[in-house]
Image 1: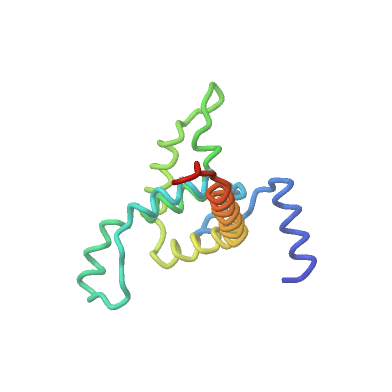
Image 2: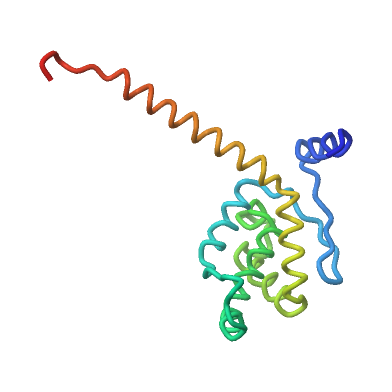
Length: 159
């Protein structure tokens, strides 16, 4: 990655610039994926069944009943957690209704390939590698703190 690209990503992240992404025939201005958005997406991903590439075509087609869950994941990424959870007088459409409407629009107008490409494009922008590095670092710090705590325990003599 070039220095210009890194600086651009940092600037976009700090400024919270919306991203422009084309999905199907529409261009959406979407917020930078936040940890809140990724957490909402992770909840829905956890509800998906496991698929293996070796499955027979009938098993894959039977799994299409979960297509709405996949479209919902894209809808959450497009809308963003902050907009979904927004409440108040200025919020005309409640968050969950927004997600349902966007999910229906995605299902009615996009192919599975378009949904796949859109989800992967947004997730690549989300900086998941940075999030993974952060969580790995925090787990390491937590484990180190536990080990230090265990080694400093004192016992009474004779035990």
